[in-house]
Image (cartoon, one colour):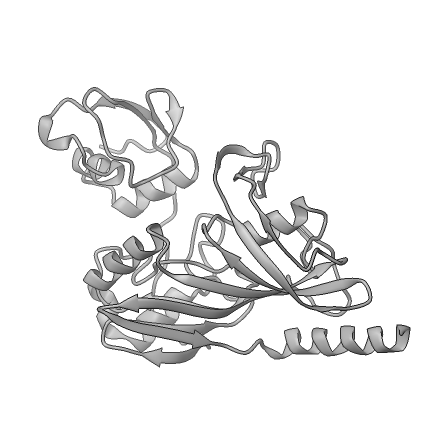
Length: 311
């Protein structure tokens, strides 16, 4: 029986369900739907626990928790393998390191159901990616925004996906970004604003948002230009749009960022690049550096030239 577009209430009353992840609990009660479908409902804020919006698929169920599920229609993604242009920086037995180009989404969501994604390319290049339990986001352990370029870890098997997800949760993966921001920031600093969904614009995040979660960003200036700064950025947490939201919050939005920062004639996307990545996996240290793409280096060259003329 279809339950889409209905609201169903269930209560956690079985002892063996206590401690179970929310998405697994829902799947066990409604096996006609996938865990990915319930993740979509969570992302859409359609799941309530004890009358409060649930934002985590990993929430551990407690005895007598009351769960309200608002079933809505979500289109199944077409994950037919497709040839997608991306660079493989390194391939190990358990993981890949990808240089994601700007303009490519990592995986499909309700906002871009029919768009080519990195997942389509992974399914095309690697047959083993069809074996993942998570069929809509196989191997994905973290994300970069569509218009952010640079380094991305991709798990090649289910145990690695679980291991890397745990490493990210425990903040054992170290990431450094390059960003060009408007104006001159302090030479180094930290930004410690919680981030949540914008109260009136659902497509945006905000440092004054709803259901905010702690977020920390640290930066140091690599170069000052006439009206902008090149900064190296380290994020301790990994909230949606974190770097873009945090620099906007302190009055130094990213160049080219038409959502949070300032549009620029010199670059057609946010000036943000995942530059360095390091972690320890199976007792071995891995470290990577990925130079910025041409549009980013052109931006730096033009800003440098503009500054020299001004001086």
